[in-house]
Length: 182
Image (tube, rainbow, N blue to C red; front, side, top):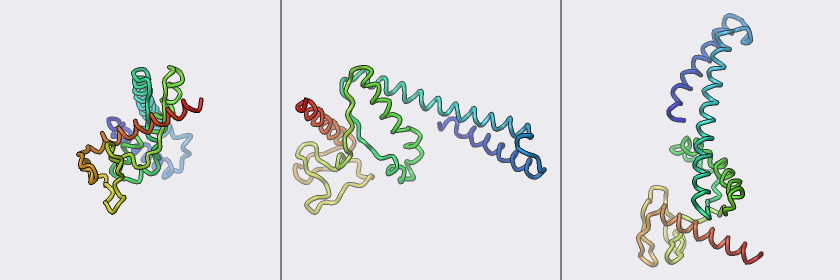
């Protein structure tokens, strides 16, 4: 999307300029041929962006499901993630909800397991001892804290790796509960 973003912005500016010009000359937009040509061009660029995004998600989800027996993901709320203005464009560009949907139906298609888990405390919990940051008078980790040391067991953690281990552990627990019920 970022590679085509500039071209899309330029085409939309041209479309807007042609719309203003047609209105200034009191012509209907349906009769304005330059406006209609530009509208089709903008629509083609939007379609290209949509196709690229969908193709990337399809390829990535297929590769993940084909190569793994179990895929575990956090059930993240995109709406909450978009509140971070520094990351909002990247997050919305990925299409997280669509990606999870693709993983779900492809897991059924290829007889694999796909599990979503709650994101609660996945980054704040020590994988080794289970201590949760923010409890017992400790401060919660901020997004800037990429590495931390557990105050209870004194193990050094890389935030994303620790969170991935916690997510996998939650997924395995959920899988065991489902198997024990059936």
